[in-house]
Image (cartoon, rainbow, N blue to C red; front, side):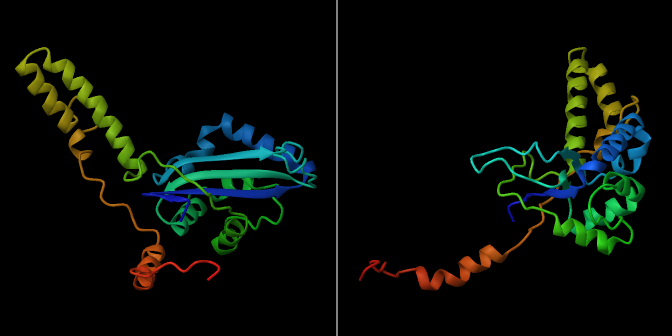
Amino acid sequence: MSNVAGKAYGMNVVTPMRPWTTWINQFLFMVARCMPDFLKGLLGLSLIHFARWVMIRRDQWPDLGQGKPQLANDYMLFVSNFNGTWDQYIDAFSDGIPNGLDLFWYSSIKYPHSIPVTPFKDYIQDNQFDTSYYYNATPGSAQRDVKAALRVAQGLRRLSVAHAEGPEAFAKAYREAMTGAGGHQPLQNMLGWPGYAPIASTDTDEADRNRAPFIRGRTPTPPFA
């Protein structure tokens, strides 16, 4: 799958909006930015790397040589990167911020609400576009793995300072860093192996294996023989 890289899945969803309702969504997003607690349920989902909603007016689509698009609706682009399966992500979204989702997609045409979850999944699937190329800088790491690595890096920098102060200072700083006695999160809980990334699909490998006997040792036939 082109939108899967290691443990991460990249999602793109484009939904149409009536132009006269676009300002409602703009107002709702302004309120959400001014009230961070509104997104507390979203921020608490540790499987999400990134999520963003972008409104694109019907006259803002680029002309890449195909001519200026003549559209009847504005559109909202939702992009996200997350760990886990597609179903797990949609379920977590629906459980975590159902009211927030209903507000963010308030103006989208035929939006069915986030609860019950089955119509919501159908709506997302019908409006989702797979990416043709998806790059992930840390394919073997989930969101928690990346955060843990950053905290370990900060801890090592603190230990390097203590090392210059002598063995006793370093030993004390090391114990505090590992156990969290120094007021920081204990590093001993962040040194685990992240594990293997899940396999999205084995279809390609199986297809190569099945056609291998027909390809090996075969002499290419001239196209006009």
